[in-house]
Image (cartoon, rainbow, N blue to C red; front, side):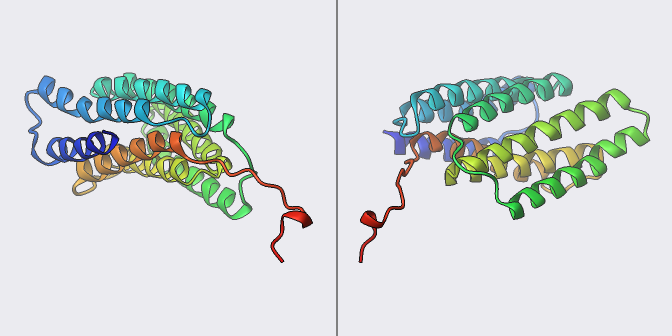
Length: 219
């Protein structure tokens, strides 16, 4: 059944991305929300191998992001709602946190965040859009933290999902505030839906617990 739901996500997501026209907006929004509703169902059907608390928090985050998908046409409302969704993801990843972020990953994340802030938020500060610039900086900070906490879980699916989410947000923000990106909608939505699927699937990730003792080594 989970495989059927997953296939439905792919098919309906592709229909929305490549075939649904921009007008009427109400129909566009409805079609956009269907894959997210299916991702929520997929997450709910996934056995919680990390922890039940992890699953509950991620389900809440997915639901908030689904709401954000519907209100993103009013940009600031969507930005704030996605911000809240990321807070739930951060809380879930924190519950599953196991190891520090490697130095090389920390450096890459910091470089990305600073560069992204200079490029996108800097363009708004330069135009005198101080409030919007501050909001963008705050959003960059929260997605940076989300990516950071995902890496600390050492859950591959969570990490892939978090990085795809960061990429999707980056493309959307650069296209909106800096310069147009060809095929933006396809880039944004393919990576966005994939990110949510990976994050949802991380509920079923196996947490390997072991101790390195001489008696456990195979000789």
